[in-house]
Image (cartoon, rainbow, N blue to C red):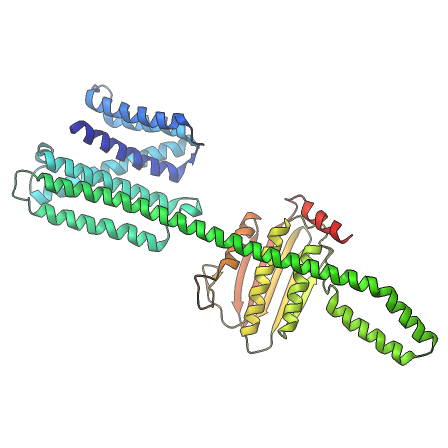
Length: 441
């Protein structure tokens, strides 16, 4: 029994060390020897704690083993390894001492007396080790550099609420044994069950978060695919219209030539004006020499015109734009969709100003008239009623802009919402642009 408890405590301390390493170091790709290293380390600490000599104290042997494990399982600077080892050892020591001190106050006995009470000492160890694991897990989830690992506020409340109730329950149970010579086996069983339940809660929270992230990624992917499909269809439609108009161009010239030969100048003028109107509505209004960008901008321009929104577009030659097609489509489509939607809800003059200029960097600016927008932590809050099924557009935009190392900002002032971004160019091969251009050649 004592051997099992000792190994269990060592494993819980190793778990605490693992979470601190995850916070400071980069994990190496998992290999079989990692598991072997953990087993050997656990066995070494157990054997040395039981049979070790006094020439090299156990309190120094354990950090040394942790440091060796960090070299085998993680990448990083020596300073970070030492920091992870130090914080884990100090945390475990402080929590162990605090739990023993609180129990000595509760039972009104000395710490040495607690160590002589079998069930009381084991219960104290379970409480202290599980508390150390909880603290290290919270540290790992709150201060991790990886965004996906960071703990959301609602899960943080749950992660703290359940242990708090557990400690209150254990305290009430222990109060009944203040005048007894030792805790009973039932109290020890409750302590063990509570410790397992707390570890299970941490695991459950982690799994639920992972499931939410998978669902969010699936929703983002679905939204991207829908946008890209719409853009492809718009490009195909514009291309077909252009081919159709080009095919009929010679016929139009023949008609105009005939009217002029017959000196029907009025009819010729009316016919030309009619063709000009058709040309405005059927051909590309925007010509940036980038077929995908043109397709998106013309599609959104026509949509804005249909909603009686004045849309001003300023672009330059984007033929050398080297950002992958799927990314620029998602960014432009989402931002322009939001601008058009905001204008539709606005009761005043509706207008959108769009700028996409490529020089040393790609400069993107979208401004539109809008009802008041709340911007929290640099992000606009959705104004749609069901927030659970909306907001993926801006999430997609922010995700892509971060991947492109872009700097961007949202702003709202005096009924005008604006978005400005600077995107470094030249970091991608222009294969998508060349492929799309070949379609129209």
